[in-house]
Image (cartoon, rainbow, N blue to C red; front, top):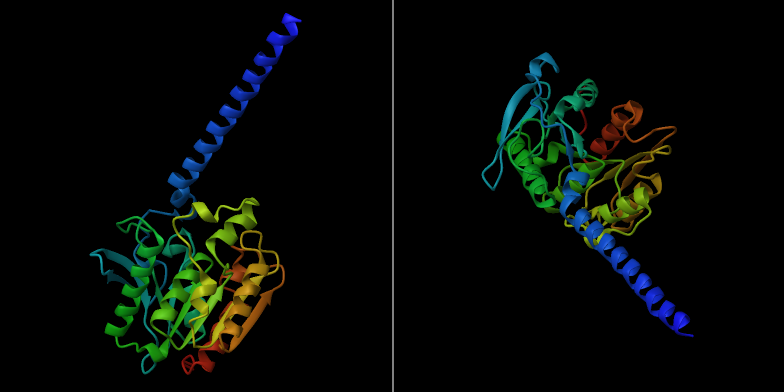
Amino acid sequence: MSGRSDARPRARRRVAVALGALAVVLVLAVVGVAVMQRSIVFVPDRREPPPVASVLPGARDVELHTSDGLTLAAWYLPAADGCTSTVLVAPGNGGNRAGRASLASALRDAGFGVLLLEYRGYGGNPGSPSEEGLARDARAARDFLLDAGVPAASTVYLGESLGGAVASGLAAEHPPAALVLRSPFTTLADAARAVTGVPLGWLLRDRFDVVAHVGRVTVPVAVVHGDADTTVPDRLSRRVADAARRAGSTVVEVEVPGGGHNDRVLASGPALVGAVVDVATLGGAAPCT
């Protein structure tokens, strides 16, 4: 009898040790996600791109000045003489401005000027990215265009993926002529859950709530998404379009068949550029012809 009596406490101790170890692992995992999340969300190419003239003829290297004292490099391709219709591009979470040269070129060919915003911590810029920081960077880009003689009524904001949250937030504060969202998600928490299958929203320091932003937008909105996007499932982009409709915006929604998140056909192809032209025209900022 004594052997069986001794076995039970030992078994209970083993279970307690195993549960304790599991709890430690879970705590460490949570702490790791909390500490490292911004390095997961933001994936900058920190290298400084070459001079813009060697990549995008006619464009200029310019500086943006943020409200918290940073000076950011960006690329500016002015509209044709006599025209002010300009697209302010808020990038996604990866790369740097050199990777958006083809988009700028396509928009120029369609009759727009282009400002390629470069966030803090990207492309040789100082600072570290965060939701608040990127919002400051976007405001600095808008201020640059106003100072350059491009009025709000001639400006279209274009946000790529995570940049859709940046662009829609700016549009809610400072309405442009029109807003274009390429591969937008509803919230960062929804995007994280779609990729991982785990509800991580309560851990996230940055929210990037696109649905809340578009609920306060009053200008025409275009939503462009690919049906083969495995990074931001197109169901999330469709929900963004629905939210904009509920808010009363005129919505141009375009689905790109076979378009993956970073595929050129979606990132700078005719469907995206055509949507920019359509929604800009609706907003009174038709491209130069």
